[in-house]
Amino acid sequence: MFGLGLLAFRGSRTTIDPLNPDKASTLVTSGVYRITRNPMYVGLAILLLSWAVHLAMLWPFVGPILFVLYINRFQVIPEEQAMRRNFDQEFKVYADRVQRWL
Image 1 (cartoon, one colour):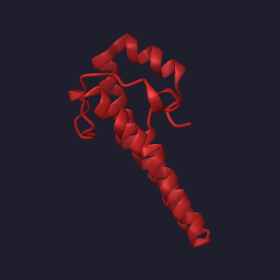
Image 2 (cartoon, rainbow, N blue to C red):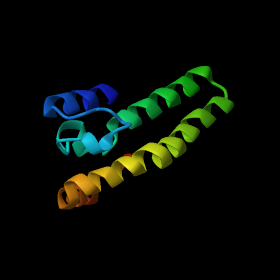
Image 3 (cartoon, rainbow, N blue to C red):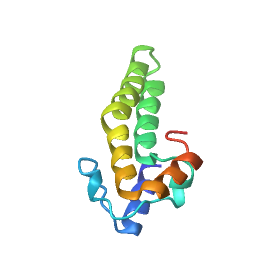
Image 4 (cartoon, rainbow, N blue to C red):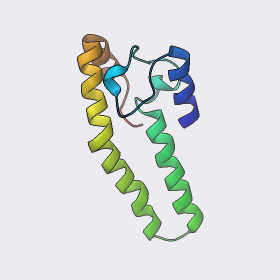
């Protein structure tokens, strides 16, 4: 999922820099972005969850939970605020149609 998100950004020729979401020139809504607004973060969460399953212990499951809580608060929400500023109604329609995670 991470790779599909990256390819969609590259195909739209917009920034993938998570530290500067205001520099986005295009609102990417095609491909994997029709399923989730954050496929790269979903992919990383799945990777962490897979690792926890592989270790077959309970404590590694804390990692994916903390990742989702942290990334949601400090990355996803600021990115969505930038998308609202940059793409206004287009982002609202998209956000109403596609879930943030899955």
